[in-house]
Amino acid sequence: MIIKIFRKEKNFEKETIKFIKKIYKNKESSFSVALSGGTTPEKIYNLLSKENLPFNKTDFFEVDERYAPLSNKDTNHKMIYSSLIKTISPKAFHYFDTSLSIKKSLEKYANELSEKPLDLTILGIGEDGHTASLFPYSKTLKEKKYTVAHTQTDRFKIKDRLTLTFPKILQSKKILVLIKNKNSVLKELKTPRKTFTEFPALKLIKHKDITIHALT
Image 1 (cartoon, helix red, strand yellow):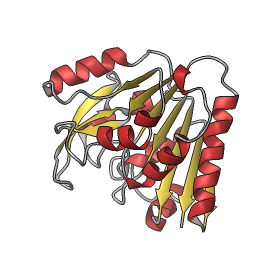
Image 2 (cartoon, rainbow, N blue to C red):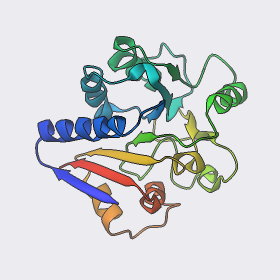
Image 3 (cartoon, rainbow, N blue to C red):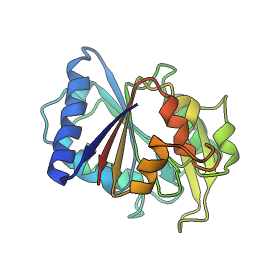
Image 4 (cartoon, rainbow, N blue to C red):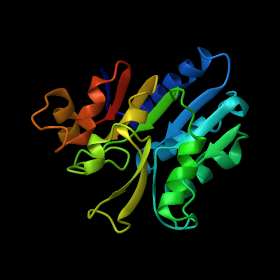
């Protein structure tokens, strides 16, 4: 696990873009990236959209989504599309189709996911330790078979979530975690005191190639 601490937002953004570009440089053929929602990566996606990268060879995937109409202002789809997808020409943008039932949406998305590892998964971590839509004490934390799942949370207005599971996330070749002003989260990652059931993001630190960019 590599942790890089940044004091200035400009440096945080610059180094994150540099990190992503380096992965692209070392990849000659098709590329797959899973994108998280939230306010922290939004500026990164905006900056990334201005880079001259082979987006036409890139399959973008959602890490997770609120089960709400895609027109809802709080959906990850809306943020990812407006900040990145609409200004580039990707090979494809795969997302949880919330116009379908939860079961059918999960089935459709699972079929779109390749059995191959994602080249890069970009994640955030909440104050409670959740990552993607994998929340503390959720039974989905112990999922070993399925690549996607339906989860629920009482912490946010939209309770139903659709998410990649840990088996798929940890299969990724590289994981990049973006954190802003979450010193307690950083402290727990550096010196764990909780179980991964209490703080799900602890599961990530076992990954062989994980980098954390933290703005403090």
